[in-house]
Length: 252
Image (cartoon, rainbow, N blue to C red; front, side, top):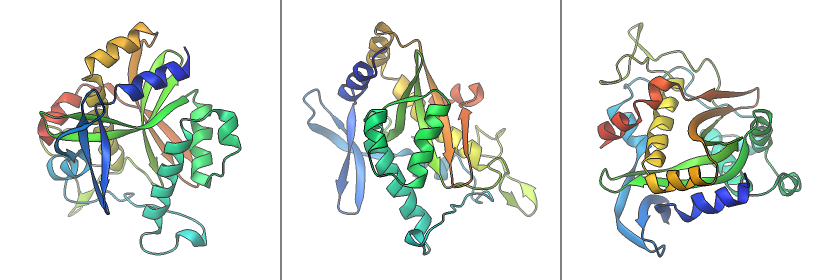
């Protein structure tokens, strides 16, 4: 399967784009001519915090970094944004082109991890949305792994045990109903975000059917952690994958 063909398909069928206005931005739908249409759409991150996650932060919900360039209270956030920007730009290039490009350490680790797990980057920051539900977001990286299309969520800088739940008064916290059987930890928070993103992409029936026609057998969710010490890849569990549509309905 040719990566370029898949890239052209997923990019040309994107139902919207991110629109920046000053320091803020939003997702908006586009028509077939690529013209912006409809209202500003809500992102899923804020909605997840309001309607799915608990109030307490899990213990590893922090970023770590090294180097004088990222000092300061928001150094980790600035570093994460810089890495996201590089990964988004370089994901559309060939391995040879990426090798010649200047890369931050976490950017290099990201592409090394993708290669190790047999994931070939196709494109990045591909918008998915639902105008009726008034929600939108962007897929961090879309990859191919054999005949699978992998919707990949990239998280940089998270250290510690990501499966440890938030605690209040010594008691481990769970997520809000109807997801109250899931502990409120960083790993599950990111699974929830990935499940909602994957559900939005899979709702594009015409795009999914065309992908199948050119050889894509299925679409899968992937969560990739990258920090200075390690990289770690998780397949989206079936429990979360089955709840993608439910997540979207709760977010709206």
